[in-house]
Length: 70
Image (cartoon, rainbow, N blue to C red; front, side, top):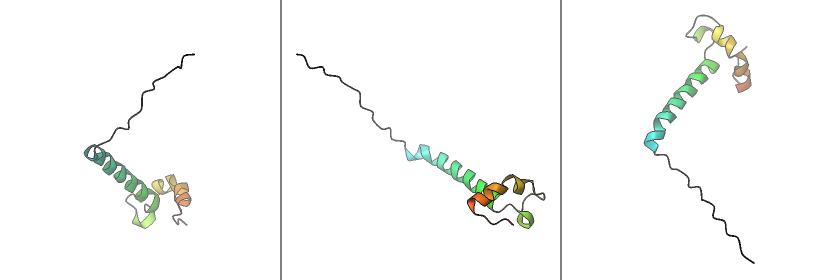
């Protein structure tokens, strides 16, 4: 009787240097802050835009995230 030996390659994790990850982390943080601004603050008197289009666009997101609206 012969024993069957199978050799499987092991998967090694790849380390990502911080200097390559940092620009993406900053970009993601800026997008997140911009999204929080539009969902949480862009409303009426304290708005960058004079109309209510942005408010109406993110209206349901405001309620979902717990921001008071009306």
